[in-house]
Image (cartoon, rainbow, N blue to C red; front, top):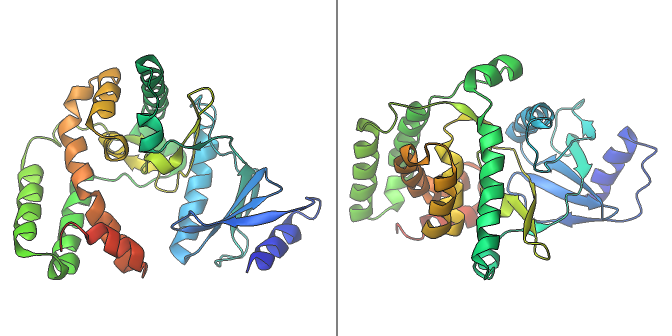
Length: 291
């Protein structure tokens, strides 16, 4: 399979000399190939991933001048033949490793932790400064209605997942969704461009300097509720670091309620992803607390 990937890259970019490459197994939706230890090529595994990759590429080009944190810059791309294995984008590898929760816990200096929080929030402030209106005009993105999306998610969870979930957990889920969807949380919502999957695996840092070195994987990017990106922080790093971040964000306290609710849906979303893409591991891991 790897050789097919390499052939496809070479047929589009014959002057790129490829000395070595290996498959990096992390991607849920893409096969990720590291070439010459310095380039990242992503090949969507599914048809719908191709549409996503094209949209992601447009978004990355659009925000390049707006955010100051390093992000992927797709210098190589092929969208001619729309089939998995043929479509790809490639960008220069961004230095750094994922900022896992353990890594953050091991940063003993409060000042350095604050600086990391500051860097993450600065990135989000820049990204969220792009209003829904502007982004939908410039990028032809569909305006998503977060409360509608949550209604749809609730619907899917009831129809698809409830058969696998124990009764008392079903009750809790229903209560949580219904309280939230009928409440006031959605009333003062500003739709902006969001990252959409702002968790530890997509936040890169340099452990030597304790600095954020880049943000990757904008596959879930689009128009949405800024609170959704903070739910990624809360889910990845826990309450204390999240509080530090939300306090640095303009009017952060107004979005906290939505952040907590979104976070509570993540495991169920993972389970649904598992069912929809026949990914047993995602299914089991998302469902483990609800069985």
